[in-house]
Image 1 (cartoon, rainbow, N blue to C red):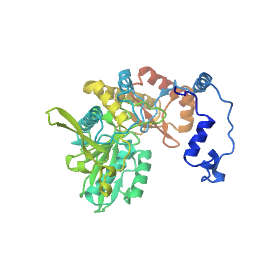
Image 2 (cartoon, rainbow, N blue to C red):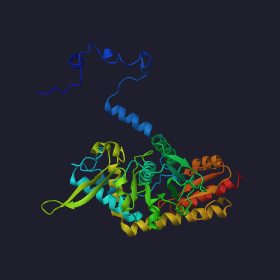
Image 3 (cartoon, rainbow, N blue to C red):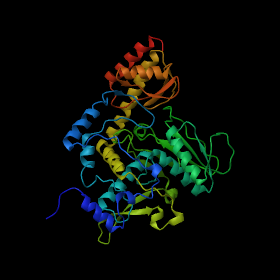
Image 4 (cartoon, rainbow, N blue to C red):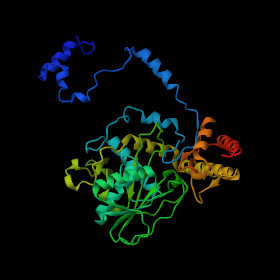
Length: 419
């Protein structure tokens, strides 16, 4: 009969003997003594039910009922319950990252559909089947352009998301690609110009001019494309967090890279394709496999080990659930709510820094730390600090008239105190 007891000393000794070790301490002899912890300040062990009750008490210390107006790369949006009802089914819910050719037809079909909706939104020819996040997508896109143009200098607009910029610096440092911020540069060996629209201040900006053989990379907000035309860039990248992904204390997110057809063989990640088998039935396959494990070795375009397949699947579900009409409606609601709040704050005397924005905007509140702390005490996460005077306010379809009015009234009461 099977023994259901937990691991005991007899089992441990048997395992140690099988690998030729006399004790658990000897097993860890290779670790320097200075690096070992000699004691643990732990309470007495608890049964599962008691531990669960204690964790519930701790969790109640979290405050989750704030009105949410944060911005800067992650947005709280409405997620239809059906999205996670489907995504949580055992057929889809897996931490496994599919990159092998023998993965299931269902997973391949989901990847193919994700690519299709990305190309539709961005008006590009080809999309990969997702990458780790928007920051990695931006960095990988720059490396793409370096391989295509054989150049190794990129012009970066300094007003892109600050977190993206840090990731890009790390990637490019390791690959020997130089960065310049001088928009008047006359370098003939630029591989790309990369910019973000809307940028880190929420402002729409025009696409940079193309002078030589450098390529243009645009970082976009996918929801904004429900209202506005996508940039006519050579490569379009971004994050899919706004498409049905919970904030989850910071992740997981997902990214995408879409480009013109002529550049598809330099795409990072993988591309799923649709074909027919020898019986005439629809079949899906990995059309392009870019990793070094796919026998490409030094010719690999990427060593990405995670394409956030579940996140991409959720984004695909979200877009198919909302549909074109409702997606446009969500974008319009976000736009209207943001402009409504910006106008009312302007009427209170706060200086709006934007001329053309979607649903994030920068506003001068005098003392940003004092303003944000006061608003938080009133139950409002009022924005993201940019500097001592300015904050970035993020608005979505969730911030209805009632929430906007509460924001305005609290800001008004603080402005009377003369912050």
